[in-house]
Length: 457
Image (tube, rainbow, N blue to C red; front, side):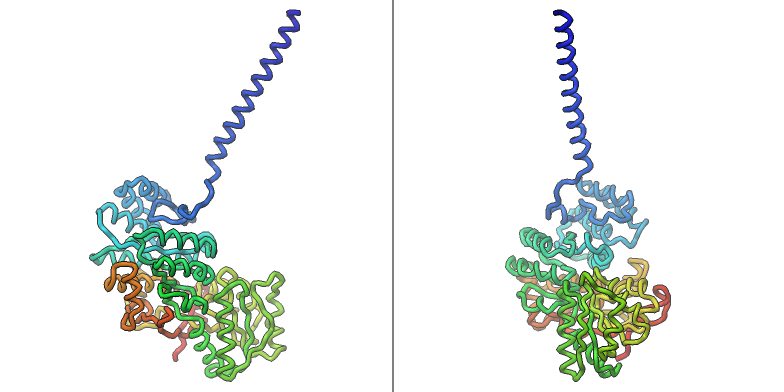
């Protein structure tokens, strides 16, 4: 009997031990897992003045230390570390914006606050291009003295739903006087009604879709509208290049692309040209670049317009690769990027684009030299447009320092500001009152032996 009791006790002891070990394992596993798994993403995690690292790529230890210090309100350390980070990589606009924000906190100054929303999670290069313009404008302004500028950065991933959430957060924050954004037209179109209802000024540096025009009195853009850009390109194709029939490759998932294609068809018709419909959709699941040019040529086209969405630039480059000089290639401003030269090289030689800015287009403009000094090389149109968006806001705030006062200033017929792209004025629709310029890809010294060069009027 005693032996049986001993056996029973031994079994019970083993069961208790197993239970405790199992519980410990699951507790430890949960503890360990929680240290690896990030909390669910909320919109507040996407907006920061400097306490969060949004651009993870190539983040130095100094930058991370500076951001951690910022989050603890240790602004002296934040300034020191962010300066060190910029010495290692002066081409980092996020670090420069955070540095300026930290310096304002350290000096206990009372700045005016604006925000910028960019698609860090979907297109890092585009985000950095826009942020460089904002960072440079902020840094120049704060160095000059007067009322300084504080900048919050948001990551909207070019996602319309996230853009709406970001817009709602900015509207709620009464200290935000204006927003530079968004990048893609679908994000801007989604967010614009929220800014309008909340009476917070939004000025997009890059969205050109027609649907943005007239959304509301608080919605502006510094990039020329799609309609104006298409008119200029149509006249170039028909009158300068003397091509009368043009086929179009658009992106059905991009409002920018669709607006540009529709406006190009209207402009061609009005100018006496002919649209050749080859049903080319760069976003189609079964898209085959190798068949496009042959189809266009056999349909009677003399020129081909490539109008991709920024995340599908590769598809347009693949079409250009198959062209082999058979058709005049023209494009929308999305193709005005360093990646076109890197990926296309000789295949995009001769490509013509209507663009809002070129570093050699405005004589004696100090922006080009200043930007080169800041970032260690030439910048592109997105940087220039974002820079101009900030200068426009600053000029407006001099006339009215509230949200309402800023809107009234920019809406005034007499309002103007000077920027990287020259004189900035707006139509009653909120559209920029200026025409684009034409550039052509040609052999040069910039990227892989090619560059964008202005075409003389």
